[in-house]
Length: 198
Image (tube, rainbow, N blue to C red):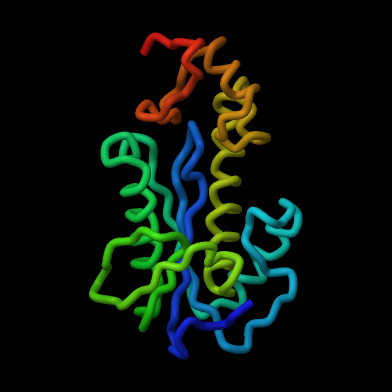
């Protein structure tokens, strides 16, 4: 994987997790890695097993020059839409960095400027650049931990397993039990043939 898009001392990578979920927050992370960082197993979080992601998380946290993680909850997602909520999550994560980035590399193709920091959107950036891959791992592991925590409150949806994604089991639980405060009401929670009275 590439270390930098530009040779900047404080180039931050940012990515989000949970954009396509039916329940729970969208979570973003921003990471500035040192030029000396090297970890062969680093990759797009979606390509890694949960055990590998959980092994890499503390390594990234210890090794990073700085990092930030932010959740955007469902009421805001429903109010501003998931794209804007994803960008807001990335902005909040960037604002948590203890160093002001010289440059941002953003996974995907949509972003909004923040604090006049120059940036570049990179499609599939989480499989190309170390800092974006690291951000994808932090976003995914922090969000998964959040979903496992709220699973205890609503175990019937099995969020510890599906993490809020629209699995058949999760959708059936919505039919059986209705929705919770963690469900995204602006999302299509059920297929057309299964209507839910909200």
